[in-house]
Image (cartoon, rainbow, N blue to C red; front, side, top):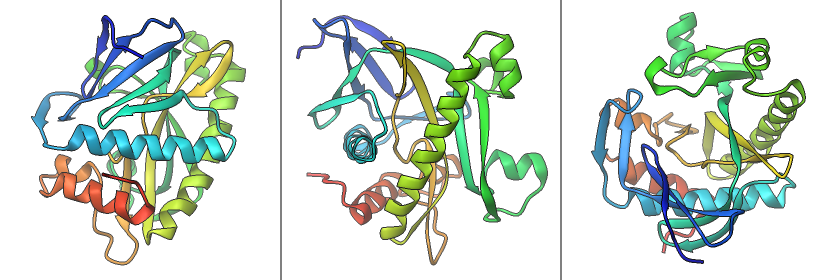
Length: 237
């Protein structure tokens, strides 16, 4: 499968068309961003690490019966995926309080959330990806009621699979975001799952091993990603 015309350049990935109208190629770049794209830096190995991490996770989810857009890893930093009509909302599952939830509600970071929470955010960098409810998403025609129900159910299913996976590596899956699209009338998991879009802590020390290392200028960002990858069995070579 060969890359053709550049279709879209995001903050960390470039999307290319292929000779098959149903398939696209994602190129994971070394770009790393925060503050809704206002802060951007290049981190060596980041594209390769995230591509391999994402490919591993997507295959694990597929094995668990969750349909994803992942088709095949093509190279160290490229993957073949289904071409979907992406829905403009992000689904966030939280197992522990962190990030914006702590800021909004004054909760203590690390407070366990039982049961886990589910939130929706409108994908718009200019607006700061604001939190929305399901009623708004339906009214504004971002997704149908049935689509939202499916996305919510799949998000919780992903949580069950990945909490167990990370637990085996003595890691805590604090929270994560997912994006979904429509492929031949089916809701399918898209985008990526990597330390860029979730929070992962060491179970004992609570050391942050995710993008918060970049956001909070903690250093050793990619080293943190690689530590998580090695603990859960992601092949990095």
